[in-house]
Length: 352
Image (cartoon, rainbow, N blue to C red; front, top):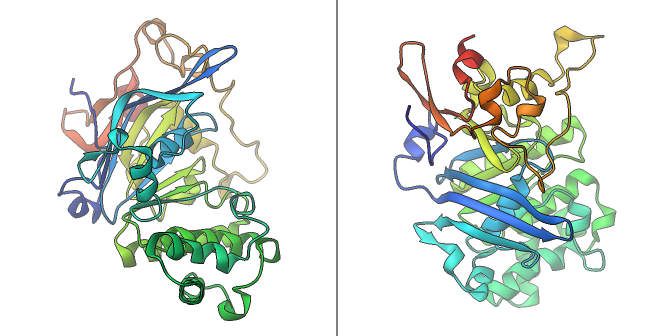
């Protein structure tokens, strides 16, 4: 059986985007944290890639390693207690883990940027939003305060903040949650980076504002041809914006697929559980499905398949061998493009 090591695959228009070398390629990345109780293995051999103009959605419950992987890419892990014992992070073919701290700092904002989950916490409460956006241009481009302020107004207009010129001097607490998230997007886009990582960018927003923010992000991405990594635990958020999906559990990728394929036929019991937990209009009044049990303790990840204690389909082999991320095929053996599953019984899951 073929083992998938890198690219989760593409669909439709994304295939053309990824025909060239990936913009970002993560290879066998491991991240661990030293604690008083022992070594917490947060990321355990993650590999994925994203191309220019392409959106990769990384899904999974809290604690699955999604955000830690992103922090390793951005170079903002606290080390110590964290460390990266092995792996590569290739940005335009260069392993950025080998760069100095100063070289990584210069990349942030200019080459890659991150949109954080909680905009109110990420923004400085004692500086106006215009000052914080303009700082990107003052630090990286050497602009004057006047010119940086003008660029801040331009960016606020670009992310559709009403009356941007009048509000450039306002402080974060004077904006709604949706507007603060737009400010975060403006800061991320300021220097027109090649890659944006959006970490749960709509978690604290209501459904209508979520849709507006995601539509804006997708529109700006198309306009600037950026690569986008969208980190979320909500499959409903990514359906209309992602090209491909990587599902994480206990620090590993357990399934990869083009976005629409994963909704039609999941190839891992964990993915199937996530899909079943999405509220549906035809199930009004019924109890919402929940995956039994809790995510594993990263200090003591179960042997074999980490999902085994929560999986109704688990058998003895699941406790003995860690399943590799294998190529998923049709019943006749034809490869399903971009599809992989780290399950000993993926055939029963997708074809059963």
